[in-house]
Image (cartoon, rainbow, N blue to C red):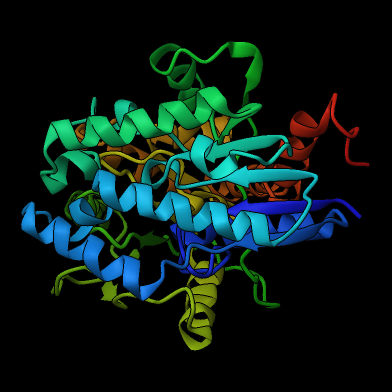
Length: 377
């Protein structure tokens, strides 16, 4: 059995709480291929973690900035390298979250081929005024140092895997990684359960799911929906995420529904099952898993042109400029037509079926293990 190590800077690398469930999904994907997944935890001893935290505070760093300070990254790298040595021989390693540790240092002494996996990089994200990096107000110099760690990881890895061609272009051009070792392998998702009763397409029911209300462009969706309701008085809009209170006919807010909570996810499954269209025209999104989850439930998707998001579903989604309110209204009006919505929903479901974590894991393994141990069958 092939043993593959999973690197993520956390004590529980495959926790569903990490990166929207990506490491967890990828871990399950490798397991379905018959591989043994070995988690490489980042467990800094208290005698190391406390002095490192103190030094970061002395330097004035807090929160995210503190956890990405050079001294923190070095201590994290040492801890992960020690954990890697303890697990014994591996056939391959997949590394994520490489902005937070020094991948060459972690891999020193380990001969297993290594792949990185990302949905983009900080150099690319800095180009977008409404990326979460820019909106968070992090110092540009700090972000550039995180990007340098990402670049070093991609350059030193055997292969650099990303979710979309949009991200691949940046790795090649911004990180100077040869195109021959950069692969767009897609993004996986947790398919949404569809209830047994047939979907009612006669009433337009839009669904918005986004934790970051501002970046996900929630206010624009509500504004556009109000105009759609002038034409379709029975139209409905369900909001999921950290949204404000909305007092508008046809709008129902459900708040944040945690991925780790079964009751919350059961409710979200029901919302996906009764909706007729998914709308998330984010101001910026690298490759949101929510698009694939919506498509797996048979929903047509209104996506954003800012980022690599639209590449996940390609012509199975309507991609709109998030700053163009008229384009958003037109897209929602188009999907208020039950025949159009149903046809696009069927197409989106077929596309989502090709975007499983198993398929992503297979592409990573095939590209990583060619020339080393052969392809995964």
